[in-house]
Length: 106
Ligand SMILES: [Zn+2]
Image 1 (cartoon, rainbow, N blue to C red):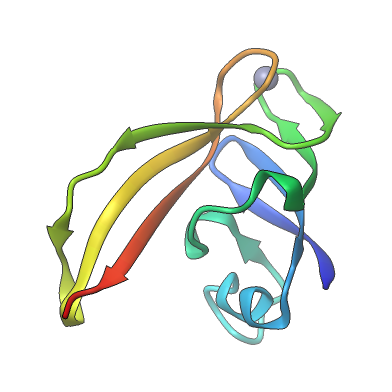
Image 2: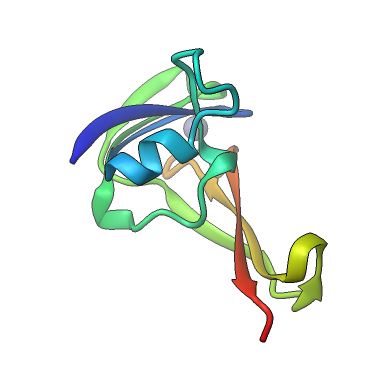
């Protein structure tokens, strides 16, 4: 496990990731920046800290998770989008980042 800072639109989340998740979270392989949106929904237990741009503060522990919808919608390459939502700030409820969960269609 590696602790990585994952960027979102409204802040960042520091989380413990597997090697596979670390490489998946990079949009560009050679640039050392990691993004929340590149990963599927993170386990709350894996989040160590988060930063909210609206509060301009760093907090210990996980964000909240807000499920936006469960569309079950086919996207490219036989993937189905099964859930979409946001990581939100504990204090002010601002959106820190987004996630999408996919499933392989049969
Ligand atoms: Zn906040």
